Image (tube, rainbow, N blue to C red; front, side, top):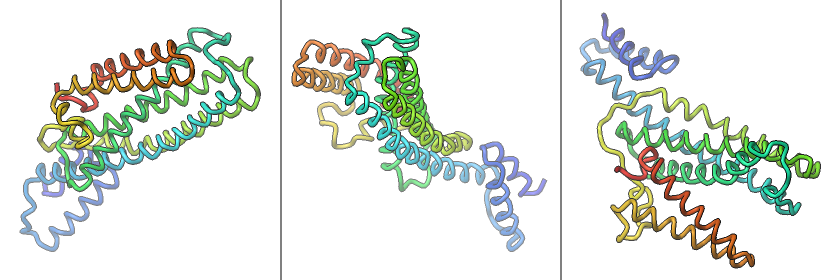
Length: 287
């Protein structure tokens, strides 16, 4: 086999196919035609070098695309939420067409956007922090892809939940409110789907560089007090406490301290549960 033939096999092995593969092979063939004795290195090493750089750039691009899409989808979600508030509709207290489905949709519409926000912001932070690196360790690239995929998945779940809520409670909603919820869900979902191909493309190339991924303390840098750095569970507990106090205070300001305290405790528990279940998967902690 010629060098170009061997390189073709190695490129496919690391996930580089199609037009990009043909372009690389054409450039290498042209280079060898000009200098048959060119020292390009073993085909497998050259292919891994291409994969490391391409996988890194794709994972960063996907993170930024997802963050932009989530920002626009967040605007759509906010419009739907404000519309419901303006209409003074207390959705959980209404009769639904199917109570189990309605409850699940409402819980998703409340919880999923928080996961989408956290994962999307963390993906963008890491991509920005490593924006000048030509290649990332494979473990670091995987974290970026996981955060991006989680953010987009949670965002799409949110948009679907908004539409389901509007359908389940349709008999109690005005025509303009239903239309607003459906339109916001459709627009937000379309924007998120538009960002999905970048995330899929990032998964196809196999980054091979060695190295350990960083954690949330590297992402947040000086925003984390010195006393909490290197102590992931203490940090998670501090964040949960801040969430609980903030939501409780909001409830007090709204003259509903008991409900505010309950929601604060539930959100704090959700923060700790999310850190336990997704902490390592999303690269928030190493252990």
